[in-house]
Image 1: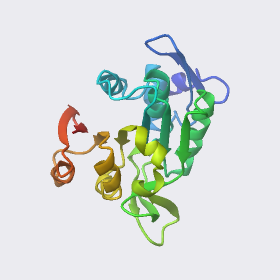
Image 2: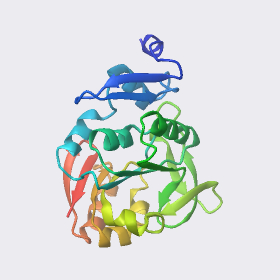
Image 3: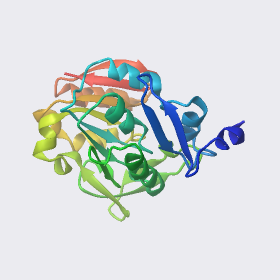
Length: 237
């Protein structure tokens, strides 16, 4: 069945589908044979995590002047939704894996978001420095875990360093899917959280201490959590 779906890809490994409002969406999915996220998009002919994205859309968190940070941007699925469906003015995409980053930049161009999206082939962490891969998952590239490491070869930025004053002034939403590194992301974003207090969409396991630690840390800035799914939470002030 997977092979029959993959055979339907257009030249360049591109899938075409139409959004709920009738927009044609094109995404390059060259690893759809193996990667979970790409396979779901190809099979369902819609955005990955479409229900969650629709929930976010309905919260009216952003407008055409908004900037959104997509930390753990993968192949650009969420960034395309933010730009095409939610109509935000600017999306800052951070993706450390070279293969995913290549798909990310290709899909930014393919979907006509080049003037609205900026892609960084980097980690986001507590400090500006370097990181490395801690666990690779070939069957789900989005499930690959990374970590801070001074001897690592992957560039890493603290959000407080990389976000410009202009972007900070319009930053209304940060989406964070970083396989356990969310604590480091927030430690490197204290200035952003204090100055702007954007909404935070965080993927995190509730069953372990990570959720409690995250909720306690963000609570110092006035954030409260709303559960949106088994491991997805929206933190808002």
